[in-house]
Image (cartoon, rainbow, N blue to C red; front, side, top):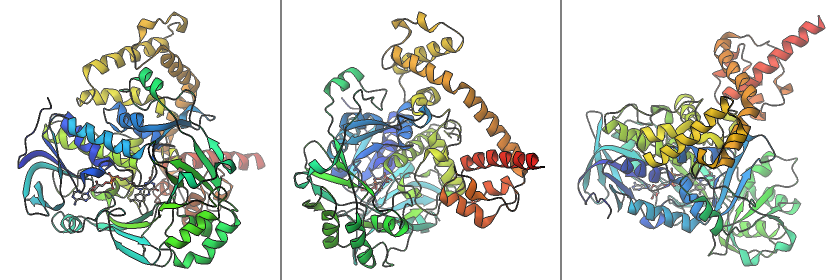
Amino acid sequence: MKTSVRNKQKYNVVVIGAGHAGCEAAMACAKMGLSTLLITLNIDFIAKMSCNPSIGGIAKGQIVREIDAMGGVMGLVTDYSGLQFKMLNHSKGHAVWSPRAQCDKSLYSLLMSKLLQGQDNLNLLQSEVKRILVKNDKVYGVKLLTGEKIESDSVIVTTGTFLKGVIYTGKYHFNGGRFNEKSSLYLSQSLANDCGLLLNRFKTTTTPRVNALSINYSKLQKQLGDTFPSPFSHFTNIKRWQQNLYQLPCWITYTNYKTHKLVKENIHLSSINIGKVNSKSPRYCPSIEEKIERYTDKEQHRIFIEPEGYYTNEIYLNGLYTGLPFNLQQKMINSIIGLEKAIVIRYGYAIEYDYVDPTQLNRTLETKTIQGLFLGGQINGTTGYEEAAAQGFIAGVNAGLRILGKDSLILTRDNSYIGVLIDDITTKGIDEPYRMFTSRVECRLSIRNDNADLRLMDIGHSINLISDKMYNKFKLYKNTLKRLYNNFNINNLSKKCVVLPWSLDKVKEEFKIYKKYEGYIKIQNDMLQKLKKNESRKIPINFDYNKVSSLSYETKQRLSTIKPTTIGQAARIKAITPSDIAILNIYLEKYKKSLICKK
Ligand SMILES: Cc1cc2nc3c(=O)[nH]c(=O)nc-3n(C[C@H](O)[C@H](O)[C@H](O)COP(=O)(O)OP(=O)(O)OC[C@H]3O[C@@H](n4cnc5c(N)ncnc54)[C@H](O)[C@@H]3O)c2cc1C
């Protein structure tokens, strides 16, 4: 039987919000043995995928593997609700391989709910938190909208897009945290007034959903999952999982001249441009209106057609994020090949919401001003389920470690994507919704999806989120690899060298990757050392950044405008990443050599 906390008025930890961040936070605290209460607006919408029906992808897949290696739950729930699994970037180097799964949205939510409900030390409550209770700069609980107070040693806020959320469709707008869900109207005020935090506004959009039976598939490109898919989680029973997995296809189509003409003629009617939604949206996930306005030379944009589940005909049109009025969305969809007769089930919309400036947080995700108050997920200005889950996990672990009187967990830029994410948002700050990319990670040759366990499972075990049983299997795998690194003959490996979930094939594969990258990783590490030394390295005033092809368009623009005189100065410019600096260093070296040759 579950070790119940019993309904009580004092907990170790209260988590506000059962989105992707809140679920990881609550599970981590409860698994660490702390009495935990998870309060959320609607118990039917636990871990809801507000937007795309998928987990993982470029850089995000690495994050899910890292959460799993430390004992988090997103990977496991994805494995058992996934309907298509694909390793992205498979044709490129291992460093950028990224696992991704299309999921059955409802199943994901149900499985997460069941996991939470069955977890020892964890209670769930459907309610709205109105205030954070603070005394002498220390949190001591929360007050509900209905007036009750619940005391706790720590509070973790993971309220996503709900804080003063306003939904826009064309010129029409109304309050909401997601479509048909109420927004959280009071908590922002408490975070500002009771906790002294600075809040700001961001916005994001989602796509329309159409009926699968109204699509003409004969005109579309089919996208199948991998023939030999790999699960995300070490805790998934791989053999049984592979046997039972039934994968569904996705499809691809494109916008065209007709679509672009319609959008251009009506862009003034979109909530993206009419000035109501003034806040910043994610640059890397733009609405179709923004894409057509920004990339005028592009004649088409790709649309992925993704099923939302096994038992629904709802189809998600990935790439067609929009704030156009409803009637125009229908016309826009019908202008696309294969979707000429598509019938909309849900329209797309834009949402604007409050977030907290994350520079007010320590790297533990505890606020600098209020002891015991932690924030995780979209409330910190990020976007994406995986980014949210990662922060929820770290906030939960650190809230737990503080209560247990143990040292905090701070992941670093050279051991994880999660370390980079948290360092970026808490040290550089953000002026647009932050999402993770491989290009943000300077050590991406050594931080890969395949070695998340080697990097982080020791940590997971030390904080009691990885059991001794699992850890012993991991140690066997790690030791076998070590023997190979020390010149043990790979042909002498026997089945006894590993236990599932680590297989003999996995050992061989990992060793192969190690050998392939060994030299590059040494260069990468030397380069990182040099980067530290090169703080005062000069950049010629007439240096042409447009010639540095590996830099993104935005980076070239920023550098050309500011014209930094040293590498140190360039590194401090907002949104310039350490990997941009590494690229710049290489080009400066080439530039110097070309000048010497000319002489
Ligand atoms: C319209 C829309 C479009 C999006 N588009 C994209 C996209 O294109 N790409 C992308 O990566 N991500 C997108 N997202 C974002 C993605 O959904 C989030 O990044 C992710 O869900 C954030 O997780 P979270 O746990 O921080 O918050 P959420 O998943 O939003 O969960 C917040 C939880 O907090 C609860 N809550 C809020 N206030 C209170 C309160 N006062 N008391 C109790 N409970 C409370 C809510 O009930 C909810 O369960 C979109 C989201 C929306 C709404």
